[in-house]
Image 1 (cartoon, rainbow over the protein chains, first blue to last red):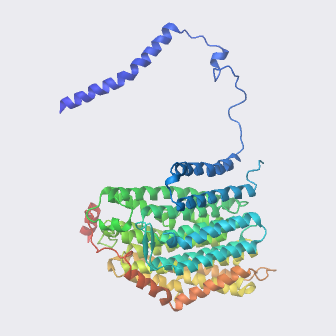
Image 2 (image 1 turned 45 degrees about the vertical axis):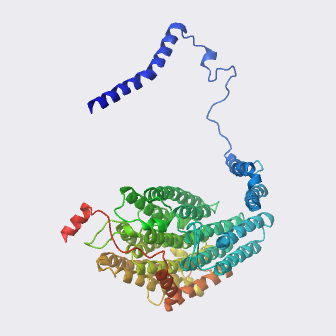
Image 3 (image 1 turned 180 degrees about the vertical axis):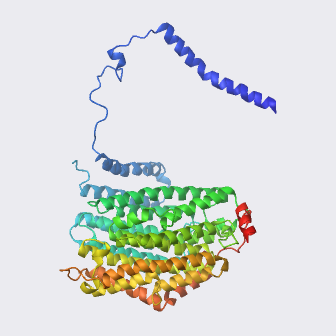
Length: 122
Length: 500
């Protein structure tokens, strides 16, 4: 039906115009009331008073990925411990046992990493 | 439920104990190896103790006689890799390598005992991820790092293919259970076809079939030999087993036919094309290899093709034949990698020249090499011959598949050349000066045992074939639904038929 498409076209036009209005108003406001005054402070990366130092392309230790992996132990632990703790009183003993086995697996991972000396900063 | 997973639980517990031993007593390799093997034997005993049949969590975990056979085979192959690793892996992170082999074995065992798409995917990932790490395990070697990275990248892309394919199958059929999926029939949704093709792509990576074979040569060559042995044997057995189960028991309605002049769309023609391409490319590319591990990789691609022929002819006999052959092939190739590992340790490389005069310096090892390579080539008294014979005979139950069988037999004749080249280096060429007898007691003993097994299965193939036939005929999984095809006949099939 042509009238359906007419409705769509009107909708499309409104959809384009609608976001343009605030943009145009902001542009007009800036032209009329805030003339450009570039300066050292205004051009700095973070306009909060602290000077930025050094280049952005620095090298950092890829050693960090090991910490990220070990952190995952605690991360996953939390995800499962929270709902477990919330429903603790309604759960059977076997659930407690299952979670303890799960924690044991995670702890062994941490102990293994520790004993392997992965946590020592090189 | 927990008891159904007893063997896997024992293996995981063993792996954790081995990791603990690796931290507390890292120097005592024999103790760590012994603990690993003990856990493996305990798991094998547990496989025997479990009831023969069972279905838990709606098919997530399934016990059946066929899966039991394959669990034992896979466990055996995992322990073979453990022994090879105990002879050849470096001192650093030794316990971790054994634990990884155990984790991967657990994945393969779970893969054989499930009828659920989700579980298939999870088990496949559990199999693959330790293998990626094992492939990159020789930290000092650049080629090992390259192998690990290539295996990981290609493997994770193919896992994405597989997951997407499985999710489409689930989306169309509304179930992740293979039995429930097989209850549906009728004209498949185009989405289902897309799902099947994507799934086949994911599995083709596992069995290294063309066009998903590119990782194989670099991984087999670069990975530590014990890891390559596991990748070539255990992972292939599990991959073929679950692919056969998925296709015949889950998607059996949509097999189609790859017969000459009787082309019907479905998964069978896709497999047949991949099989033909693998047999061609694998055998021809192997002719020019100068490294035995690389040669074995191309031979693995070719053998992936033979196995896919068994699956693509889609009858119960041909699937049984493929299952028989994959076990035989895994034993043979594990043994061949064992010989390569010993030679590599002894002479420092695995190029063809490193095998010169092996028959003079280590005659027993050379005879084992002869048994494995002759079996791979498919010469009668050995198991490889019967494996190929059964596959081709079962495929010819459908005479229109003659084109595929003729191609495979012709290419098998080509393969004889490169297997004999290796044997020529070992038996005809003289040994270099100052080479002494290779000394690797544990691996050597195991290689001899594998050679005996290949010989025994060649002299009495019934040992393995009878249980397989019995279980395969009796069991629900692997019995394809009545051959009916609901694919709309495509223009291509009409053209093919008009040409007749």
